Length: 122
Image 1 (tube, rainbow, N blue to C red):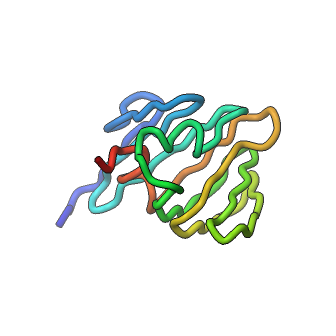
Image 2: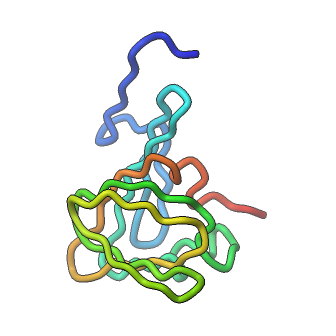
């Protein structure tokens, strides 16, 4: 149980920064939560840039995100697709691929998926 306030400046002192091709996730461990800020550059695609790290057929992380900027398109394993952009709160269940749309970096804060994201499942 944590009884004192905590904060982390993700620009200066993230608890962990996980880098991958065309992107990164910056983590803050606060109380029982791990909050992650994702940055994915134009050209980023999960199946190209993160899949080799995690060795799963599709992303198996549950994302509950708030999108700060940019656009991301997500394709579920069943083939359904949706696109998300700045200002949107998003829920994406496990079993998906995703890629940046357009020329602007995609930046989002994830409240559920960051702890496991881009870690090896070997």
